[in-house]
Image 1 (cartoon, rainbow, N blue to C red):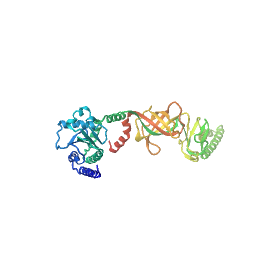
Image 2 (image 1 turned 90 degrees about the vertical axis):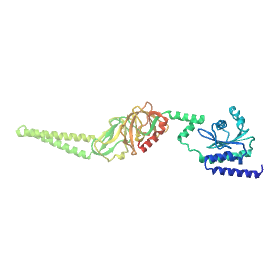
Image 3 (image 1 turned 90 degrees about the horizontal axis):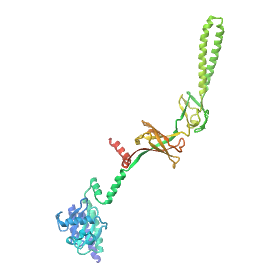
Amino acid sequence: MNPVDHTRELAGLLQLLRRAREAESAAQLGFIMVNETRQLLDYRQAALWHEGPHGHVGALSGLVELDPTAPYLQWLDRLFSHLRQQDGGPCRQLGAADVPPALADEWATWLPAHALWLRLDGAGALLLAHEQGWGEYELKLAAELAHGYSHAWRQFAPRHNWRDRVRSWLAVGRHRRRVLLLVVVLACLPIRLSVLARAEVVPQNPRLLRAPVTGVIADVRVQPNQRVAQGTALFSLDATALSGQFELASRERDAAQESFRASAQLAVTDDKARQAMAQEHARMEEKTITADYTGRELQRLHVAAPAAGVVVFSDRSDWLGRAVTAGEKVMTLADPARVELTAWLPAGEAIAIEPGSDITLYPNAAPTESYDAEVSRVAYRAEVSEGGQLAYRLQARFKSGEKPRLGQMGTARVYGDWVPMCYYLLRRPLTAARQWLGW
């Protein structure tokens, strides 16, 4: 074939592609495919097949109206249904030997010996039949033509809704069915519902060391997290004001005692002095009680450890010179061998947690370690935690084995009930959608 013939055929290809792009309807485009393609490729018969859930022959060369009950169209439907399942590329030649015997027996009745199969992406396929085969150059032109026809057909392709897409996935091919079955099985697979929460290792049943009286802390004699024995001096309050009160009360008590002795001596000989003695005795008892109470309050200014353990508080400089009221917490005395876990479950991610639920601590300072615990208490009401977020407080007991160090911070995974995987994956999106839609 000389270059002039190549130029003529390329011009014919461009003209056909332009005619296809200018088609005003799917029927007009189908007519161009089965009838005007003869300008580029030689054939005797042509058939256009529309792809879809109910594939069918859409156009035949030389015919305007089609009869679906005709034997020729029924045979073509079976042929196209077989060919579309074969992976032979966008353009290939075939004959009676390339189809099952049930189709090959009637091939000579309906088609010439050679056929050209052109796959049209998104549309279906175009079948050209001729007594003689096509050369390599003609096959290249046919492949390019099929690509152009596919592009032109997209503007008339039906818009499938989600029901049609689901139906096509279920109806076409065993592989798709297997994939869908696998997706359904995975969606129903049970998985443990869990959420993450901020957690801290805290002492179990700690002793709170409070300010005994209202005053100013004058001295802190221990360091934070220091281990102390029973009776160790911890802190003391300023005794200036109370010492003055005790000194005054002691002098008033001594004066009352002296006045009572004088009245007792006079009462031996004087009846009036005997009456005054009773008043002096009551006054002496009053001053004695005041002095004793002030003395006991003075002794309470010095706080000692009621038991052995570790004192937990902030820096010493934060407490020196600080004014406190009676009953205000200053320190905590904890046993480092008896610890538990406190977790703050965000209110926005709260799940059904009951005493006995599992919880696992992942310390921040030890990324390779984890500690299992069991929920013992769940707060019924959310409270404001650090960071200004509402959270439910959880208390958990560590299970047997090594326990974490007191004061460790980390992330806790709280486990709930078993739920399907689809619920586990869609729980947060559904919650956000419900809040936004106001269900």
